[in-house]
Image 1 (cartoon, rainbow, N blue to C red):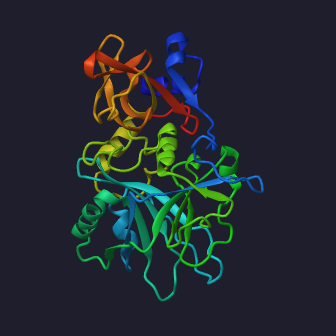
Image 2 (image 1 turned 30 degrees about the vertical axis):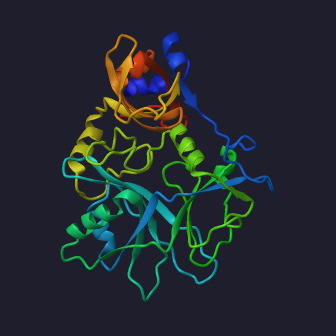
Image 3 (image 1 turned 90 degrees about the vertical axis):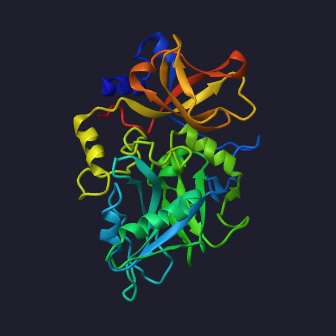
Amino acid sequence: MAAAVLSRGAALGQGGPVWRWRLRAVSRYRLTHGSGGPGGNRADGVTWAYFPLDERALVRVRGPDSAPFLLGLLTNDLPLPGPANGAASSQTRAAYAHFLNVQGRTLYDVILYGLPEHADQAPTFLLECDSSVLSALQKYLVLHKIRRRVTVEPHPELRVWAVLPDTPEAAGGAVPLPEHQGTAILARDPRTTRMGWRLLTQDEGPALVPRGQLRDVWHYHRHRYQQGVPEGVRDLPPGVALPLESNLAFMNGVSFTKGCYVGQELTARTHHMGIIRKRLFPVQLSGPLPAGGITHGTTVLTESGQAAGKYRAGQGDVGLALLYLEKIKGPLHIRTTGNGWVALTISVPDWWPAATK
């Protein structure tokens, strides 16, 4: 049933009149400029916008046992580090994954970077995480590294940036820093091409990205909510969010063939049984919004007043909601103070598969 519902949502126009006006596809994006949007200066046919992600932090895990250590904790395989050749550094490989608790619920979402291997250095990985859980993630890793030859430490020397092209066509082949050198680390965002690139560097300022322009991080979050990409503890509450309900498989964040890891049992069983009753959807809000926005965890209601799920988080009039698949065909809304209400329109991003278990 869940697969059929999602398939109908992805194949727009096949779900009847009510479905069509409530469920729309997000197939293209443009980072506009001129009205405060996150565009940049056009040159050579490519426009870049780059955003400082100060709410993201880095943990460095290094040592002879770093790879097997992380494999036993993460939902995904590790990005294989490339060779170090001493010349202009090649693009770094990155991977997306979650750390789970023993009940199989998400603790921390991370982007992993495999650093180039040097003959005189132990394997090294950088873990990008929500800065608010930096200390908690370090403690979690230290707790599990019993007898492992691994060092876990913060890595504040590098700052995290998101780099997005102006058009989706540029996302596939264009590179924002084709010949970057030194300590800069450039990697394609492993979750979806719609999220562009990740850049880790000590540098900052107007010349950070050639043919690019610095933009406010507000626009970055608005863009990723429109694309249905959760990030950090607001979108993925620790100990609450389930990885497959959070679309981890859609975002290349889980391997069903790798070895065991903490929390694997529930994730593997859910995948093989094919029963996913709820899913995290991007939503558009319409109607008078409360001054402080919609409270996280607010119940989403059907037209008849039945609970359809919960609003998770958002930016302005866009956000994410965890919704029951069987209840998303008709109009949805959220009740606000003073007997007000806000309508929700669900989107199905075009980068999602047409059908899934």
